[in-house]
Length: 113
Length: 114
Image (cartoon, rainbow over all chains, first blue to last red; front, side):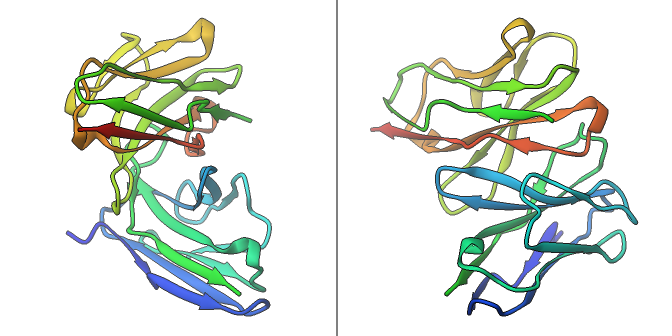
């Protein structure tokens, strides 16, 4: 079982460049999430998708867009990267309803120069 | 909107010491509460969760947490820590009215001296 798979694992961008982080889960989960993890700030929710066809803003959505492509896939796009977006990004999924366990991917380390 | 505070940023203990990590949430309605652990180089995994019922919940690896509604708290405890408990611990909350929106605290780094 792959669980939650994120790509790429590492990426270096220049300020103003765009990129998309891909996430796929094979657990037939309804809900998917994007978090960023920064030292001393824990995990902050960027966007989430409670179910296929819906997306909602989290705590820090500015500068990001998401697409729930289908039940399996949830992508995160940076249209014009900024140094403040240097972080480790985690995708997660759960059965849904907030009562289930979150399953995390291995993370994507993004550096914006 | 719900929020979570973890006031202990870094806790250092010796092996066999007792552990209590604080977690306070801010939300006026009914919540679901979680503790996650992140071991060095790994991603987060669930330690325990509370939805309703007995406010004292037991999780994996000997951890437990107590929900005190009047204090808006969900502190994590372990009677005797081991070196292998060295990790970062995150409290998380979701409001039952918007149950898919799961918010994490800033985390507490736990270092255990052998």
